[in-house]
Structures are given as structure tokens and as C-alpha cells.
Image (cartoon, rainbow, N blue to C red):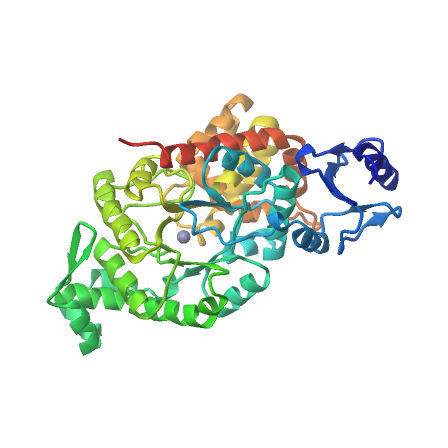
Length: 488
Ligand code: ZN
């Protein structure tokens, strides 16, 4: 095998360039094979030498310079298994850090080098894919190339997040997702949360077997005792009965046959109705009875977990209920999953303590907010344009995302000097404005059909890639610091 220098000279000749910087952590040379990633200044490429099958690119017979295509991602995963996603929920701590832009993983990897937790670097919901015009293959490929470039060998997960239908599950599995998050929200009958006794009786279909299982007895989850009045039972069954049946059908059809090769999370969080600990116990026990063995369950906690801002609600109630939710999860043998986990700093110490350091945390949009904070810092003129567009796009975006703030309270940008723009990202109203409009910003096109912002944004993020990685390291690191702090 030739030296790295000589392989690099060959790659430069193939690319007709003088500048090519090798990513040092990507260099894999053994025996007759070599593989490494390099930056041409305009993009990253993969350089392959020796008998490594499946790659395609321009070749001089010794070195092949490969674009970061789907085919080359598949070849990379076959030759270097650490670049392929794996199930990760069996580890005590796992954290989803979906990368909406396909550029956040190097920063995320910096965080995970510092913390004992398994990352889910590829994680997108169908809603996010639609809003950003991406595919699961693209999302997973970005993560594979990033772990190769950074030499991150611990492993990572790929989460088909918030999947609601069989078609979506099949699509995610076919694309290589190693985790399925089943969103049962469309099967949850939220009306039942507020029904009085008469309404409950009118809607409930008597079920002797169910009543025998649940009435006139009490249940324990560690130190907590749980019991049901007839009204409690009717309400729990009306709220969650259909969702439980749906989860059981999906488990039997898709998940059980995979024998643990894919992680399974059940989410009941995307509804207006908080899951009481008692109802959580009901869902868990009925799922178990039907043979469903989720790796994680995401209840809807009390209070509000809004996108991109801290928890709002009664912290004492949260703490009391989190203790029971965590005990129920342990009792039934799964981990508690915390959704919409971006920026929930005030509840992280509670969750870390009550789960005894066994949890799945899911964050998604906060890496997008950090990317936009970078734009506000580095290119105020571009930021001002994007911000003005976001204000016009807000009503449309608010159809998909529940937020309580309004752009009306954000200070008009013409009253702010450039230096004050990054501080907007400390305001809930400005954070939510930018947080929920990401899809419309990224796909906005001018009259000629060309992107209004996307190309300029990506160019900036490429120029300041190291700053972006540092912002993510700090920001996601703050989440993990609080979740994993030692308590006495
Ligand atoms: Zn969720």
C-alpha cells in the first residue's frame, strides 16, 4: 500500500485540485486497503484504495475518489460496520439528536465523546422529512459519513420517529432504521379525559374480562400503589384502548418477527391529554398482557413540553409524577422516553434522578436553532431576511406545531443592532418563531424556482462548521450535564 501522502497526491490529481485536507480521524489503513475522507474546500469526498468492494467514483486504478452518494454510503457500511446504525435502547442512557440539516453529527459526536450515552444520530419524523424534502436514506447516509469522518466507533441508532401508519413503518424499516417510534396519538380518544361519569358510561362498552383484571384490586410498581375506580377504568380504556390494540397489532406484524434487531418505542405523548401515572400503568400492563415488549415508552407528562423552550408547568407535580412514571417503566422492564426534550433544563435533574440514570431523551429541533444562532452571529444581513420570512410563514407552520408564543412579541429587527441578534435566541418567542418555521425557510423558493435561503445558509454553515460543532457541543452538553449530574 502506498503512503497516505502518495494516495493524497493521486486524489488531488483526480480532482484537479491543489488543496485537499484529510480528515485525520477518518484514516483507516490496513493491509492492502485504505479509506479516508478529505475536504476539497467545496465538499467532503471519500478516498478508497485496495480491494474494498462497492464504491464508485473517479479512479486512477489505485485510488478511487468517491462522492458522498447513497451507493457509497451503502458500501461504507458494508466495509466498516461501525458506520451502520444499530439498536441502542438497551444501553442505560440513549439520546436522540435528530439532525434536520444533515450537518449536525460532527458537533453531536463531540458531545458523545464526553458523555457515557449512546447517540441516535439519525432520527427524523415523517413530518420532518416532508418539511425538509429529505428521505430516510439521506438522513442515515449523513450519519454514516459523519461517524466515519470523525472516527466515532461506539455505534449509533437510526430512529424512524413518530411513525403513524404501516406504510411509514415499512418505509423506515426498508431504509435501514434500527428504531421504530410508533406514534399512537391518532388512536387516543382525548375527549374521554374530560368526560363526566354519565358520558363515560355512555361511551364505554362493558368488558367483563377487563373489569375483572382491573377493578377491586390494587397494583404495585415498586413503592407505589395503583388502583382504579370504575370511572378511572372506563376513562383509561376509552382514552387508550384503541392505541393499545394498534400498538399490539404493529408489534405482532412488524417488530416481534425482527427478534430484537430493531428497537421499539411506543409514544403516547403527542396529544393534549397528560398521561397520569395510573393510566401509564394501565397502558403498560395491557401491552404486556398482549405480549408487546417495548424498549421505551414516552408518556405525555403533566405541564407543557413545548418545542425549543424550557418546561412550563407545576414542577412539584412533575417531580411527584416523574417518580411514579419512572418506577412503572422499571417495573415493566423498559426505559422512560422523554420527548420534545430540547431545552427542558428545569426538569432534567429530576428526570436523571428519578430514572436512576436510565432514560431515552429525544431532542430534534434544537440543533436547527443553534444553526440559526450561528447565522445571526456570522451574517446578520442574511439572518434579518430569514427572520422576516419566518414571521410571514409562522401562521402556516403553527398548523403543524403547537406553540404558545407569538411573533408579535418579538422586538422588530429594525430596532436591533446586528450585535443584538444572537441574543434573540434567549427569548422563547423568537426561539419558537424560528423553531417551527424551519421547513418553510429551507424550502422557500423565489419566482425563478431557486431556493431563497437554503444555498446561502448551507454555504455559511460549511464556512463555520467548527463554530457550529462547538455550539452543539456546548448546548447538547448542557442537556446531558443536567441529566447525568450526580445526586446524593
Ligand atoms: Zn414525541
